[in-house]
Amino acid sequence: MDDTERLADLHAMWRVRALEEKIRELRIGGEVVGSVHLCIGQEAGPVGACTELGPDDALFATYRGHGWALARGVPAEGVIAECAGRATGVNGGRGGSAYFTAPEHGFHGENSIVGAGLPIAVGAALAGRFDGSGRVALTVCGDGALNQGASHEALNMAAAFKLPVVFVCENNYWSELTPIDEMVGEPELWRRAAGYGMAGARVDGNDPAAVRAAVRDAVGRARSGGGPMLLELMTQRLVGHYIGDVEQYRRPGELDRAREEEPIARLTRELAAAAVPAARIEDARARARAEIEEAAAAALAAPPADPDTAKDHVYA
Image (cartoon, rainbow, N blue to C red; front, side, top):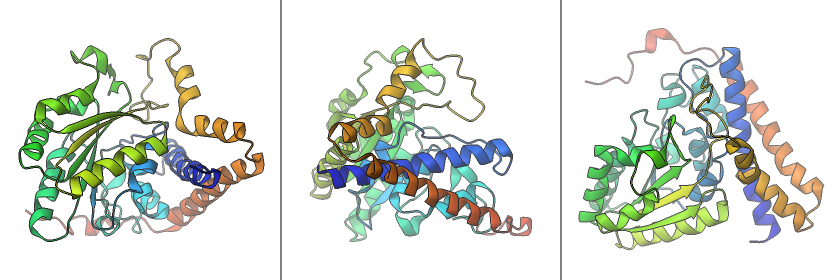
């Protein structure tokens, strides 16, 4: 990658970081209510992956999905407005932080049920086989989600029918508040792929270029009929599982090491070492923060969602 491309990645990751920090600020200040899960420290995954998805491809995220939505092209103002319960949110303020969706941008929603995005993505991929779209589905889950029964069923079905699905596991070492290495016999989760009869790989999830290359391979394989693939992105979250998590479970020195290796810090060091002018590096950060501040101001100026419309778009 040349410096321009790496600066573009840095800017894109700063957009996600700034969005998450703004949502955290608004949650602490009371403008956002309810459970909020942030992807601070995990920005390289969505930034690297989403560039490889086409307009007809379907992305399914977890409840830690703000960054994936932003990287997929969902406007920051719409995300913030949704989290803040404003009428101009992407779902009119009905979805909130953990449930919003924006299919017009290829973002088919978050899901607060652990692992539930996997079977839904399998359904989208199966539908794509018959509707002529050539759709590839990409679904994101955490490391703990791979221990869910529905996840096993989804992986098995995708492999059995050679469906065009890319399963992305963001392994941040913590299954909510429990370390993943205490929950499984084989901590390299990507190795499970062989048991299903699909391809698998472990990827440096703090390197957007590495993520991009791996997702490009997986999407190309899926689109050409080669079946699904399981990618394990090794990363970490620099914040609690949710806002309010006191993180007493953290291991000594863990966060210090994580802050050294998190994607923005690492790429900033690499650019500086490559003699990229400090002004260009700072510009990537400043433009991202200015955009998010402007988006937040516009979102908060919008009217709250009308409670009388709460039952709209509800079907049984």
